[in-house]
Length: 283
Image 1 (cartoon, rainbow, N blue to C red):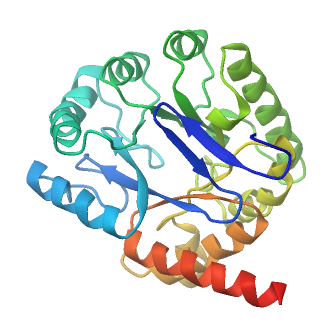
Image 2: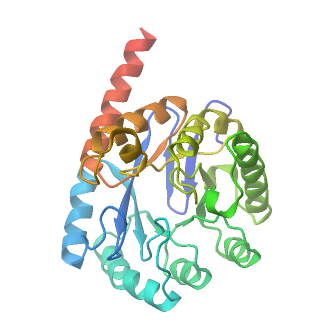
């Protein structure tokens, strides 16, 4: 971090000071089968217009995804995954040359192609758990999001926090050994990523946001429209916005600073409300 009192997220051509204000990290799924917005972003022009609008609402980073990672997702070939992303990526970079872009992928060859194409942030749901990915990090020095994926662990409620602590300690250490600094490494508790997919695990992970501050790395809030709202309130996929915003506000209070979302305008309003609330509390 820049100093002991500040939290920054840094990468190639960007430096976001997260100390007082969270940032919006917009999700651009380019897949037909994503759990919430599959098949929505079907036109390049539509996506370009959406980015322009969301920039106006304050979005700082845009993440492209060419493969769904919802529970029991259908895997696809690396070539198909990249073919979904590449035409959008080229058009976005042409229209917005200074944009900060991420890719959501756990596929080695897709990550490599993304880095070769100038994408600055790699979001790996498997937490860079292979030497091949770490070698790519060492070669290209991107910023990263390393997520705790409960599907890769034998999760138990009584040991989950210890398992997450061990995971983040090890993942951050390996990424630093590959040449990254702490401000290049975003950590994500992985809400919604469990084979059991229970509300109990999701709530533990949300609460663990507070403990994650000990790592001194930027913390991601990635709960947008996820199914915890269904289990809490029997909310359908088009009824989860309010629970999403309420729990995002909660995790922001605990220390989350990068809010990964589908609903950018509403998240901007959340951040403004958070800042007003924080000012009231400090009076």
